[in-house]
Length: 304
Image 1 (cartoon, rainbow, N blue to C red):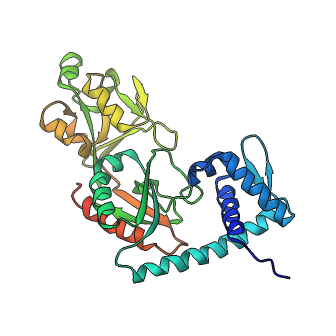
Image 2: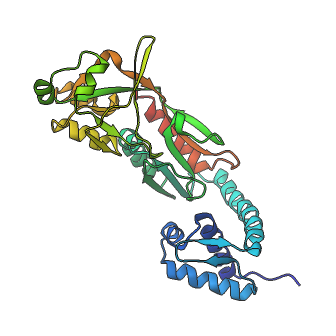
Image 3: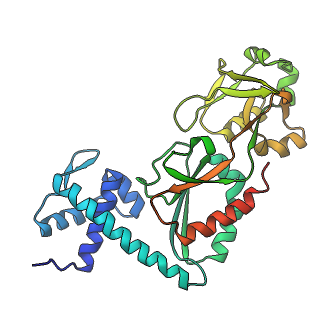
């Protein structure tokens, strides 16, 4: 006899699927904006009704039982079909609806997203838009995001990636006061005698400054005076006479124009990958995301 599913059953099955994707109650609770204890109670109720243990619990994470693994595969297919059916209704709407979650690195957030979010939310009030600014690389599928924004070279290979604007220029900058006291570097090797601000990437590695002039290319791993994990902080340190920062020129173009910062070795500026927005290749692109990408690329065309 086929089991009849109630609204409560469907809700708890969705809880199980989200919990399985996140691998723990805390992350799943944050995603669903409920307490971890509420999720635990819902899952225990589901297991009791089904008469099968679905997960193995420990202090920090959960793992699926064999029954849980089998159920998850079926649920992903079934809920995927439900989601596709609901998404198809957007063709009959004047404006998309639903939930859209984007994970974006801080440089892209500061340079692109403010105007785009304002325009998007005004034109599409039925879309619940959430943007998480995070430089660390994340599994956007496992963390429940519809798309991510990173530099082109950092996009996972199994994703569909769409460029936003042109390649970006990386420069070295310092305050006039710092350069007056420490001297102005005339060639890359002079940087060894300066306070240079290291930048830790989202992968956890410290970035080696990549610079080039014509056909000459250098990768610099210096004795960093300080290491930060966000370029905005590196720029702020440089503004306060703390040394030389390496960043996107677009982030500091106004500061250079007002002479609060000076370019260091401008002939060694280096072009880099454009921002890309990416999303899973195995999913149909939601209408809400397609519209967001269109607005984002229009805004990104102003970057150079």
